[in-house]
Length: 226
Image (cartoon, rainbow, N blue to C red):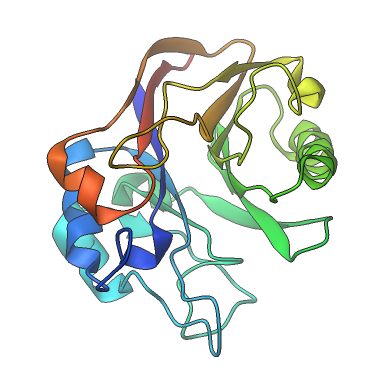
């Protein structure tokens, strides 16, 4: 069984600041995932330097970031995204970058493991862009993920009945409202789980510290491989 999670860090500044990545790391440590997809791990402008210091990650959480090539040396992720995992999983992991269409620069990251492909994503702000991006991701997942795929991240989609049509062959799960963190009302963060994977449990991590650390609450899912 694996615990998967997704967390939009909002550049580690809570709702309004200050920049305090130790809060986000404490949330991740408490959540105790095997694999977690992170969004907004870098600052947006200039050199896009890391908002979540990579030097603190393993010490504070026991996890290690995926090795992402083709990005700035000062950045932790690609388009602000990265995936953390247990060190023993990292030894057999291969990460790919998936460029996405849309009006604003977006991309997904795909982590390939021997029995599972995990795709971390942060979709656009317009539904037309999100549909095009999901279509690209679903097509790529069919080529690189083989049988077992989990997509997870900030889908930026608050409706259950629109915008996710391309994922009809996946089980789409929104564990609950995750945004805004202090008083969550919208289910922006989701999982899309391929057939053949057993979903054991899901939830939104809403402990008090999580409400202060970001504008999103993290979500989690326990899955069992066949």
